[in-house]
Length: 119
Image (tube, rainbow, N blue to C red):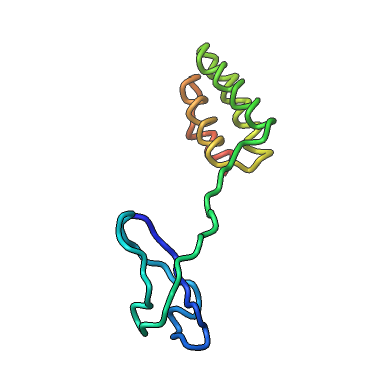
């Protein structure tokens, strides 16, 4: 069910709920509210701002991740691990650091000693 936003037509004659925008959950085919559910003041449906966020990696990160994937596909685990580790350190990226440890392990390294070393 979608969330709709409403606000009072006349803020001077409204309650604390409808004086500002408030949200209501109801079906697409339901009639829009015409009155505040708390005080009965006339309200109108307002268009909401889109609050979606799209996060795209930087071109540098995308290039690094592509190269890491190529190394992994070729079974070059130590190369993939080294590149992941280096980039993770620069970018302070824990997800990439985990990927580096996984690749070190696949390459036969003792991951326990790497964790102790990196802290």
